[in-house]
Image (cartoon, rainbow, N blue to C red; front, top):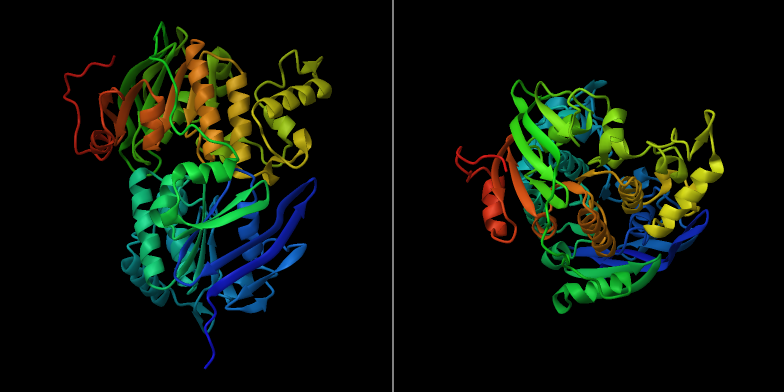
Amino acid sequence: MEQTPEYVIEMLHITKEFPGIKANDDITLQLKKGEIHALLGENGAGKSTLMSVLFGLYQPEQGEIRKNGKPVKIESPNDATALHIGMVHQHFKLIEVFTVLDNIILGAEDTKMGFLQKKDARAKVKALSEQYGLHVDLDAKVEDITVGMQQRTEILKMLYRDNEILIFDEPTAVLTPQEIEELMQIMKNLAAEGKSILFISHKLNEIMEVSDRVTVLRKGKYVGTIDTASTTKEELSRMMVGRPVQLVVDKDPAQPKEAVLTVEGLTVPSKIHKNDAVKNVSFTAHAGEIVCIAGIDGNGQTEFVHALTGLEKASAGKIELCGRDITHLPIRARSQTGMSHIPEDRHKHGLVLDFTLEQNMVLQRYYEPQFQSHGFIRFGAVRSYAEKLIEQYDVRSGQGPVTVARSMSGGNQQKAIVAREIDRDLPLIVAVQPTRGLDVGAIESVHKQLVAQRDEGKAVLLVSLELDEVMNLSDRILVMYEGEIVGELDPKKTTVEELGLYMAGAKRQGKERESA
């Protein structure tokens, strides 16, 4: 009788090189059937590259892949799909103008006599969504649904293709705490049904909660594989970064001074439905404090930030920055009045992906005298400025300032944006999910930088979905629910549970609460 092999997937001695960098240097990873196996490492450690090799997006220079003990060749994602390997990418691969259902069946359509059999497809997707608790609106267009729903769409896309090996690349980077809980449960259900899961992450809480084993990579090399039950968060962060990491933010009490940003009665219409996305929001952010807007994704934070930064128009209300009314000013004028912005969507609003890193570093400043002379860009000045930021903020890339932004890892793209915005040295920093997709070492550094900015007398408006970050970093918390501020909390006096109740709309402070 033939013995079933212990490992469903083995990646043996994989080496993958890019110009100027060995992304994977002799890495071995073995996945057992029915286990959740976490792949842990800093930004740019080679995790996504390794998974892209398994999914057929890249070809390794050396090494071999085996499925159920037999060597296999995976030359494209189609080969991977044929081997029942599916992947949910960190930046989703969905077509925004298609519906959820069309995205799920795209490329795996059922046809009879050349006609699309949507009814059968819909029934199959509905059955899968019931079975795994993945509830989505199949007829909604992808551009109109939240990021969490887009992710469910990606998971259903894998399940629709009957995949057995599921790769999740940073699946929680864009989710709310509640959605993360749900995703963890979904992953456990999938593993219980016999699916094998590879889970790329650098969030230690999640790895401890959901994985059976962890493989750690550092700077493209294999550090080790351990059983999750026998390790600690401190041990994992040391393996990952190579030094002990501070998991809690060190900061003195805030010393708020004059008002930098005053928002009065701001109302922003919704693009999705007839109601307003932001309803009559008023608050003040002072120099020397970190004010955090907390909430579950999709409660108007995005629209609020877009109205504040000039990406969308408000239908009512007033925004004042450094004593100047900026409600109707264009983006550049707001920026010059004193606002820097770390945007939520780094690809859409943060970077020009086909520009080099140095070009991205001066996106809002190329017209300043230090970077141009008589309308001509001073390329030397741009390069030395970019090199200074890359060094100072530890932005890792294959070719330094001339690296094309698109080719960098998500975390290093984020670091580049944070470096650019903080270095502009303006009175207000609007930081939306500033540590999204960053590892513990980089989170520690961004948090320190934001606190340093606060201590230098800047006003920091933090918009975050990470409860730990909200509690750890902010001096005041404003909770946004369905477009309204429903509570103002002091992080020293509140609990995560209480914060969760406000975020879910189960609790709100009375109307007598005046904006501070």
